[in-house]
Image 1 (cartoon, rainbow, N blue to C red):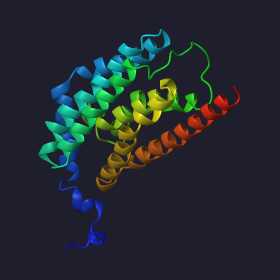
Image 2 (image 1 turned 60 degrees about the vertical axis):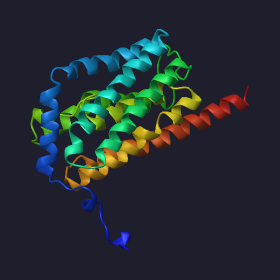
Image 3 (image 1 turned 90 degrees about the vertical axis):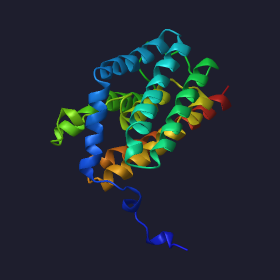
Length: 228
């Protein structure tokens, strides 16, 4: 029997950094210009939560997971990694989870007021994933063709979703809908670490911040309930 302790993460990633980043370029080329549509859908989704259109907001957050799961994982990444098909199905499941949460009251109506508590952290993650994560690869010399965008690529899709959940999810939805994005941030961080990408730690940082933030929100809700 194989000694699993002798294996490293690199043994489960059978491709080079050049091949992986070329995949990102190919997905960008095949998806252009849908990038802007998904960026707009994320902003529109948060706006709809402010006006009480929670079901439509959930759809706008869920559809990008379907796209990333099918186009990036199943049609692209699967050529490099046998596990990508399973990743793709996980992303499709996450899309369904988000939509079901929206249709069954898992999101709350946001108020046009200053964010409270961990909502600040949620907005920070949302803005980071939506606007700043796409700038990382070009900043490190990868060029705009390697820019990763919400809805097109899995990493920013997970980050933006974690932020949106911290801002707008109700109690049970926060954890039900957060596990797949959290796990992907860890898997994505490990992959980037093997690829020797300088920004690999950012995904680990997002996972830690989101997990701690969710715990903080849960404790705050329990205290609020106990004081009633």
